[in-house]
Image (cartoon, rainbow, N blue to C red; front, side, top):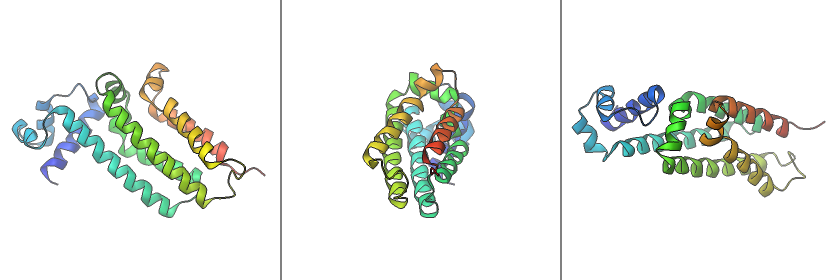
Length: 187
């Protein structure tokens, strides 16, 4: 594992334990097993480390989505697979402390995450609907994609989750149940 990767992994671990704002560059250096000077050779600031960590996660998530779409065209199974991936690989960013920090200290990074997830969601929905043309045949795919995107954008975000004293996991699971009912073929 190279030094940059060690720093990113250390950032993930610290974010999981403390959120994004509370850890220091000194703690990051200790966790990564490098000097603080070494961190600054790779990153200009703590925010740059956090941004790189989020970018790394989003690139991995996009690759996982592509891999899953090649093997699974059932929307219900796909969403459950992806939620499991998110809950295991994205724990560092979906815990209450990290969500709170995104809302309070790094809203521009949340906006990047939001833009990424909306782009991914639209792409996934279009591909799943193309693979399952009889599913929701009476609904215009543009309207469906816009409606589902709006639901996710308004519910699966730090403001809604924290203001309603929810966790990311329980909120995502509830949305998954709604999507399951919605995407289950009617007899």
